[in-house]
Image 1 (cartoon, rainbow, N blue to C red):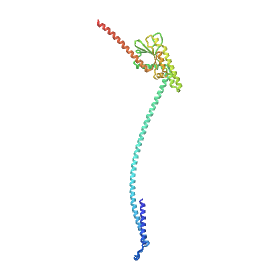
Image 2: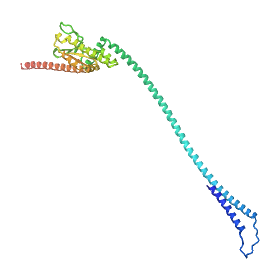
Image 3: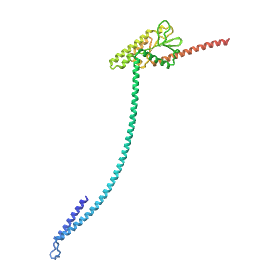
Image 4: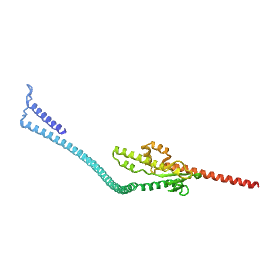
Length: 329
């Protein structure tokens, strides 16, 4: 913009010089006044115009040089400022890149450690799953045998008796025949106060239940459920026909316990046929699970303790009476 103004100024100056020269050359003197003999030639005019143009060009160059120096100085300052800012930006970017590299390296190390832990955990879980699978298969094969199921059920019953504080030979007898001419061997015979006894058999109707768990269709599950209920009802009737209470010569409790050594199976019995419990009670058979057996044993234990306290109190009263007699004498 400054260069355009300088060029316009030169053009105006040249035009002014040309106009003055034209006026001087064409001016006429008034009438009656003698003219001075000063000839004005084209060379004089051209020289004057040349000098004016050179002076204008010189002035323009000086001004352009001054402006160029100022612009160069301003550009140099801006270039230095830009270089400084770029250096700061590059330094910040370099710092951020180094920090990001450190974070990525730390993340890689942490990820490697985590993957190593996950890998080890997966290996441990795989080993545990393999062991559990083998144990489950062994347990399934063992429970497929009726004898094995009976032994396992008796072991469960003994664990519950131990937790209830019962001792074999003191509170109960295991696999002891009934007293009398009749034949029958209940799995457990509980000794109650005043010479009474209570019998319990362990039954484990599990074959149909396992098939129910392995069934894939609703029709198969319904069929195996019905078979399971039929098996449980058959075990109840079988136990009722043995008539332990009627065949034993001792004072016995009319009811006999049918121990199902698994809470899940006991709950499945209630879920499959709620009337089966009442049907068993009608023939003096009480179906109990480990938890309900523990409650029954608690009642039996409390009754036995009360009987011992009652018997001891009677002995104390007898001794006190005899002491009173002797004291009177």
